[in-house]
Length: 84
Image (cartoon, rainbow, N blue to C red):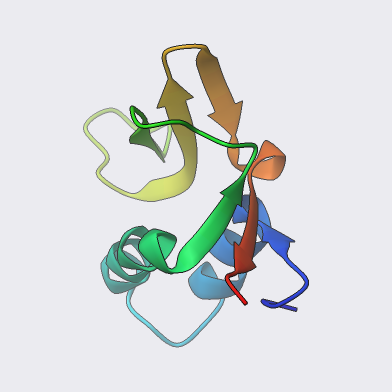
């Protein structure tokens, strides 16, 4: 699955359903992005944004998106593939 590719949303769902603490899963996903070829091509400038739970003051991440100078990509629109 990682060689053929998966969406960032699928990776987030898989990591959040695993046995890791939620904050560890977020940290692991963030660290792992450097190991993937990301599509569409993001260019040199991009920023990972965390989307938090609706509760006021919540620091519970529920999704991520990538902001670029050309706009913001939802996690379902970002494709990850291990480099060959």
